[in-house]
Amino acid sequence: MRGSFVALLATLAGLSLSGCAGYQLGPAKPAYLSKVQSISVPTFRSEVLEPRAETLVTSSVIKEFQRDGTYRIAPEGRGDATLLGTIESLERTPVRTVRGNVLQPAEFVLEMKIRFELREGGKDGRVIDGGRVSGTASFFASTDLTQDQRQAIPRAAEQAAARLTGQLSEGF
Image (cartoon, rainbow, N blue to C red; front, side, top):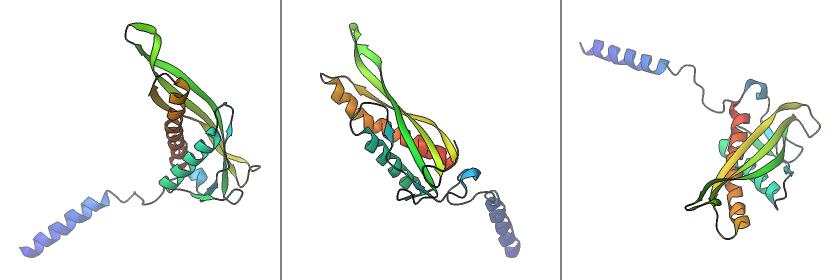
């Protein structure tokens, strides 16, 4: 009786673990990026007139790649691939107005749009992947709207960096 109980438990344990047979630990990057182990990330370019936006976005992307762990960050020109990015736009859109005055915005949404290319080897290599990502952040208007917007830029950059990293690490 005891032997059949142990056999039943062993069978149940084996069946419960067989559902995980197709899973794999570690990064699950897209097949077309399987040879890429390290990425070089030079400072992004900017088409917007916002001071220090380039370095802010570049450091956000690097931190997100380090957090994700799928790719190692390599010094410029020494990675298996190079990520080139451009900040295309920063758009501020009012989403809520002051009660009693529909012409005065109380809350805005800031959207940052980034275009990127992942190139094989250095900056002159063939394009492996590319696309556009965006990040948003909301903020309330005070007497200094420019300062309010500047405080929202890091949050929008972090969200865009997370989307960019997800696209290159997971393929979507």
